Length: 123
Image 1: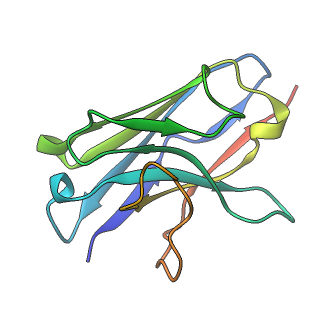
Image 2 (image 1 turned 90 degrees about the vertical axis):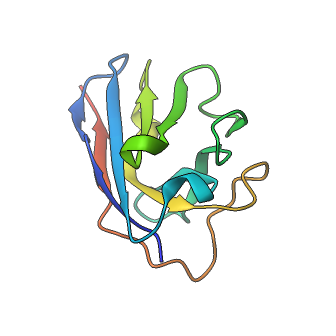
């Protein structure tokens, strides 16, 4: 089963940027579409950005489209989320997961979520 370890989060001021990374293990990342998901305090987990297995297709939540960029390097078993023009409402724990339905980019049910990486946007 594919597992991920996320990193790159931190505290950033509004308007700033962060680049999140996740490293996959347990299987060949290139076999899977995958995505970034986030959960803010008191809110349900939501899809942020998803990408097809080869990287040719991407899908973004309306709230991040034009600001975030998802990418992947299957040779390194890594995926990334470049986050620009960050807003306080982007504050959340961010997670990677395999997501076969990358065109809808919904959090996969019954997923064994990792630790995630905390992103806090605040002045």
